[in-house]
Image (tube, rainbow, N blue to C red):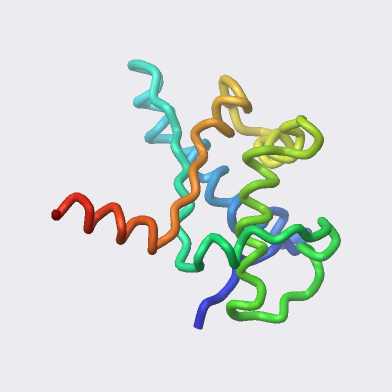
Length: 132
C-alpha cells in the first residue's frame, strides 16, 4: 500500500516526517565534525513513488493537517509539505525556518535551494537513458 507521510502530532511528535528527516540530516554530529574541517553542504532529495501529476494539488494548509484517509489518497500531502518547506509561503521561508529552530545552519535559503524532488518514474527514465 502507498502510505502518505506522517503528520506532526504534538507534543509527542512535534514535526511531520519531512521536517524530521531534514532536522536529522542537518543536526547530525558526523556532519558537524566533517564541516569543522571544511564546508559540507546538506542535500535533501525526496524520492517518491507517486507520479508528479497526482502530487501537485492545490489544497489549503488546513486540509494537510486534517485526519488522513490513508493510502494513496493522501500522497499529495508529501508534495504539499515539501513545497511548503522548499518554497515557503508568500516569498517567505518562515515554514522552513520554523522547523530548523535549535539547529545551527548557515543559511535557511541555502537549505531550501539544496532540496530536490524525484519520483521513481523519473529515476527509472534517467537510468534507462544512461544504459542506452
